[in-house]
Image (cartoon, rainbow, N blue to C red; front, side, top):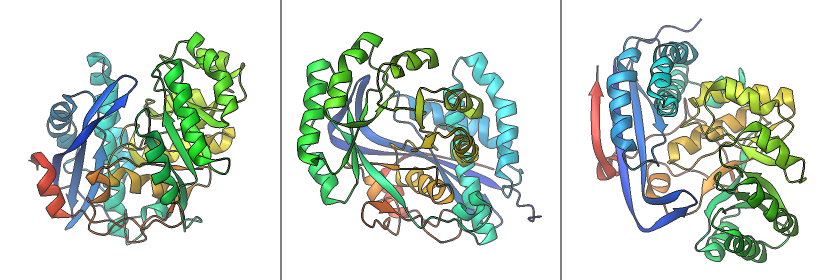
Length: 381
């Protein structure tokens, strides 16, 4: 039995990096790269986690308030050595508020940061990498293959070429911008990638059923390996109707919260790939549970990650612990919160990411980078 490690303090920081060109999405534009970092301090150790705050524009203010006023007070004094027990407490106390608020997503996203930080802290206290803690012993995978995302609808050829130069085995394009534009995006990507690299497509729930059916021939023509979140609403019964019309596997999960929702989608024959986002869906605790469910249901995992280096490293530890994880997602657009946030850069090799082997997540924040990009900070004790 591990020694109790009472949480003494929680630090919540919002980081924002300006970008030269807004990134188009089917539902809006990303005008800056942002993240919410949570540091949990206990026993002279610090664990770090991340909460996704890409949308909406006021997400940083909401997340700062939810974490500092709602989540952190429940964490002070809790045992950092038992992340699963802390998550159980947080969900029991806060999800009813989320239901009444009509916004369970932000609650889960806030909890996710705490959970990742607690796993990091528990690993540091035990002198063990998080991947080994997740696996219940030595993790069996030294690295996890990664695909390049963030490609399209602009700079398709440029970003595909960047992905090839960096050794990625596949590219995911953003579609959902109209039939002709989407077909052009897929064609341009395939022409750069050739036949030796995988091509995935993400519609971000932009399509009606008719839109999706009209795109099926193009998906087949360009050898698309999976179709991500094709339909508005992401309802299981609709996905099953679409899946009956195409052999292209359907991927989803970045907007699912808690184990119950993932179990529903894992049990559907329509869903081939589950994509929990560790900074949104419940952190490493829920992701580990989802990996076990996926293994039992013959579903594959490819964690969603469109945030900072912290979420990416957490995903790498999950992938090292569970061979049901096929891919990591790496946004190849410029993002200093991915490339400059850590004191030691991530060690890529042949398009795969080995999780750092130090205790916990095995990372340290570059404090000068944090100070440079930090716009808000709260300390709770």
